[in-house]
Amino acid sequence: MMSRWTCGRCGFVAWTRDRSEMREVTGSHLIAHHSDALSTSDFRVSWDCPYCATAKTAYDTDGAVAEFEAHLHDHVTDRVADGVHVADHVDWNGVVRVDASAVGDEADALRAHFHGAAGLVVAVTPTPERLVRALDERLSAWPRRTVIVSTGEYDFEATPDVDFAGVDVEIVELDPRLSPDDVGETVSRILDANHEPGERVSLEVSVFGQIVAAFDVERAVAFVRMLAARLVDAGGVLQLYVDADADRNVATVLNFLDETIDLTVAVDDDRFVRRS
Image 1 (cartoon, rainbow, N blue to C red):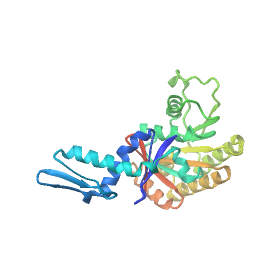
Image 2: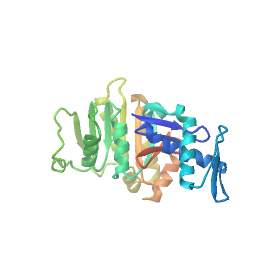
Image 3: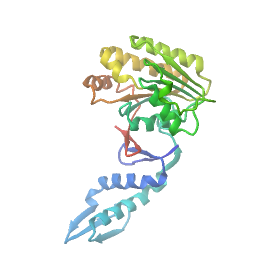
Image 4: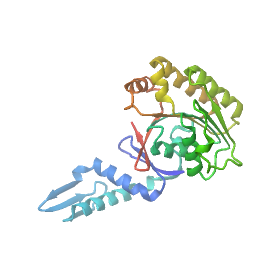
């Protein structure tokens, strides 16, 4: 679980693992909104708080800015919520676009955050070993049930230090020639067979780029929309790990999915940030 702050002036939202880390986020963000409250003249830097009568003047520019940021944070500290999850933003029922390469540390941080709060995890990934290691290293306990769907064979020798004793995990190997419809049907059947009533579902799709590259835009869009519709019944969050810079067709598909995606999140220095 994390701490969350929502800016009252724009759509910016940030999540941090430690409440104390939020001071840096709120201060720098608010000072951007109130840059006119900071001025330099006569070899000194001055700031006037837009929320109260506090004003300061100093020679040390960096120190003055840091003090101003800390002061601004104090005005919004009561709006920092604790014990929250990113998926709370969509009531644990929706589609989250994750702006991160599926094989990067940033993705590992987010997938562990989502999967660690779910009872059933279904992950469609080309790198099952990376997923296993991310969950084993980052979570205090595995989800009740984890089903890893991959077009590649799982190499147990790649993770010899992972103890699967007491862990309910299944590896489902797919034929790489399968269409998006076939992959979607497989995921749907997995949900039917494994979901328990009232249980949170975390569905990871880390093959979005490969699907876009292998099939036309229309089929890629339909794949995501059908998965999103399927999760409405189960109640869960679908995470799409995308790198729009890797393939211009990915950006095209995302434009068609604008109304389907409920939240876009990126990782910024170990903090999660909402992107509009």
